[in-house]
Amino acid sequence: QVHLVESGGGPVQAGGSLRLSCAASGRTFRRDTMAWFRQAPGKEREFVAGIFRSNGGPYYGDSVKGRFTISRDNDKNSVILDMNSLKPEDTGTYYCAAAPTIILSSMFDYRRYDYWGQGTQVTVSS
Image (tube, rainbow, N blue to C red; front, top):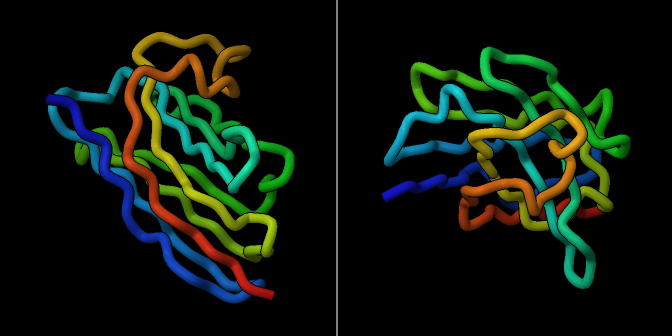
């Protein structure tokens, strides 16, 4: 059974930092594209960052460029999202996702991903 489990969310003040982790199990994800999405109440799921296998990319949503960094450790079957200079608008549930086969133009579309974690809440206060 495939599992993606996120951790590291929580409350933080604006300007602060958090590190989100995603641990994968049940199959190897080293050939998959891994990504982070987020969703705020009443809004559509939004692409945050993505990374191809062998660390290709990475790619970021416009709202997080220069502040967030995605990385992966294929040996540990995990992906990390380092978030700095957090803003209240970064608040939401953050999801880890994996896609075995995806092209660049589809990376930003949450519907292209086959595996999802349960999400971890990030709340940034002003």
